[in-house]
Length: 622
Picture: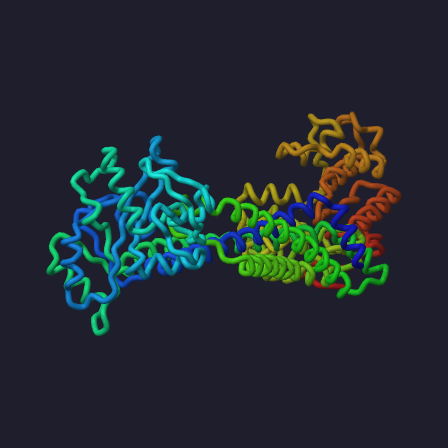
């Protein structure tokens, strides 16, 4: 059965490809969404670690800059300064513990600079935020004109970079942070002072009156023991008028809020895709099983158990879902890994991919989850396979059950003592698929009235009639008429041919009603079977009563209806043609159709699977 599952998948490449694409979509969204959310979280953690201070203090006018928070939090290009005197005033406040200055400068794209980047200087003697980070990749001391390059800069150890005409040497490369710090240059206080002075000398610094020896851009502060960061921020903001203090956590909270919103949106998108994907998988497996009912019935005849058939469906599902899920995971990695920088810029949030081990774990989990979901969807179809009616399927019939519940039909006489009477009294019964049911009774017993109600031609006075689970008389007339045309074959009493049409045109009329493509091969087959093939181009006026009756039968059966209603179908036929018609209707039932015949012919009993009798509007089974 294992090799059969593989051969089935290869034998139906389109169906297999569709199922694999759906599984790939589930795996891709699960892995991609999880990696993005995890990378955003890791990026935020990295940003928190990079700040490393309780409080940040900047000149008040700096807070008016459009990109102020990006400059101090993520290393975006930009700079501002305050005098050392202002910095000293802050440092003297009670509650200040560790404190270290930082210096900002943005290089330009002009010939005096190798690349336009943000340059951050720090004081090695007092620094407690940048130095621990640099020591992970560089254990030495930075000399004058030594720099450390962010991980995404196209610069390597030993390279020379020029800023405002000052040549600097790359001493180390930093670990990736998932922020714009990855495109930032770090250096010591002596080097940044020289670079700021050079930018002033070249007239390329917006702060012309700045004294690099007595200026800083930012103070990084840890609160002293016994003082909370909130208390320190309030004290500085109240007593130091020309600066602005921020608690680092408060500044990050805005980014954290944006990150949370993006993450939530991604999670909702993942959930929506998964719900839709699983529903589509369920429908796809269900349709596949319905198309293969005969195949499964053949396997049952050959000795396959219900469990084996269900197992076959599950094996096929596992193979397609595993293959599709692996493809989805690979595509997800190929999209995310090379283009994580683009994603970071698009989201404008810290974005740092997890390590290789975590990514591998996420990929395995996404594939496993996708396979399990696909298998669960297939399990429903596997259960349906185990319930198929083998005999009926092998007969090739389309299942359509017709049920009448408490059906009645009342008429009003125009005159007489009793104006109202019931042609059909309260009736409950069901017509069975694959069975020929014969209804007999005297004239006026209600047989034709019941048949007309069952075939959607006469509304009951009360009760309900359903076909294929649909309430016939709850449908609008347009919908019911189309349903009747597609699924019912009605052979009415009398001569019903359209005299302006040929025999062939009469038989194909059910297709013409709704502009459907005519099944001319089916029409020829019926005409040959009913011995009217030589009358294909004749008009009804040229035909005998028996021939017209056979035309009506062919017309009713030409669309291969699931339910066939025949009202006295052999009324104008001789014994030979009567027997042929009943044999034909019996074959239709054997092929899965539901057949109801109303007749006076006693010979019909020999062909009936079920015999019913109608008397004075009351239906009974013989």
